[in-house]
Image (cartoon, rainbow, N blue to C red; front, side):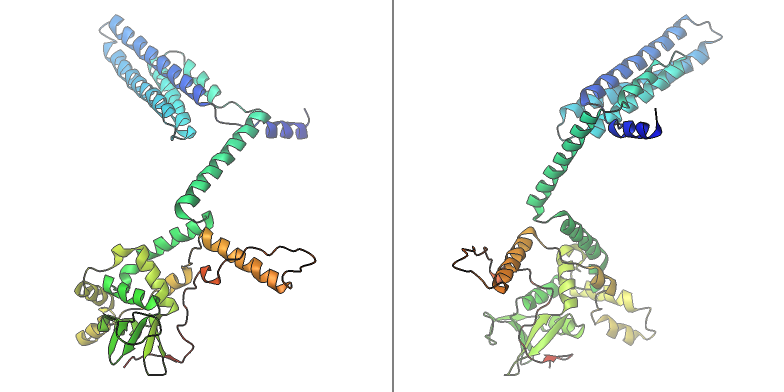
Length: 369
């Protein structure tokens, strides 16, 4: 046969996994062969003379051990076959292990290794039709799994991977922030766009644009977050400063939400953690204490690697908005042409950026008072 023909033949007859029924039959047959070999070894011990008894007894024990393993894998294969959630590879693994132990049992007993012939049934080649059917089933299974993941998370594979990376970042960097749950509450108040500083106090306004009254927010934590540049201040005409998360602050807040276990239980615990980080940087005790009272910035690598995942709903809303923008750019609806207008989504439904200015005023850094 020419070389090209051989290559074509190999392409249409690839190796494939046997059916679950074949795996079960092979596993059970292997167990029977292993038990038979162990029985033969035991019979040899019973018929042996005293001089060879010790050697034959050792052989019997070795064959018996392998037979027990082969039977165990055969039983496990039967349990896996009844479990619909168990992948087919697990059943194949049990069949192969049962065959291997059966071969060892026969070798230990000194009989013909007929169990080795069973490996051919687990390693046969597929026809072109079988291979196509197997690939089609694999793609259907992957599509079903992807649909299940999307329904659960609301994200596609790329953004699920992005979210997993963000969780990994959070586990490595949240504790180093030296934050407590109180710091997160301040940042969440700033995220609403209603956190403001006035007359030396921090408050969360009841309504946006009404910079008076509202819920009191921790003055010390607000000052510390602002000094560390997790917050930025925007001066209003009446002297009020509205606080909003900086780009670094928004990322730090998202990471803290992903890994709340990294937050410290109390302000004292957070201070001690920060003190442990800075004690080697300064020789004087007073300098160490002063540095520990300040919040460290978020590590630059975390800022660089963090990417906000986008949900499927946000992607759909963005696509509808872009379609509406293209429709407007092309002149809109023409009555004579009967061009239908695409469905549009509200602009507010598009994904919010990491940071956003509260007002178009001068940004004030770095003091609030």
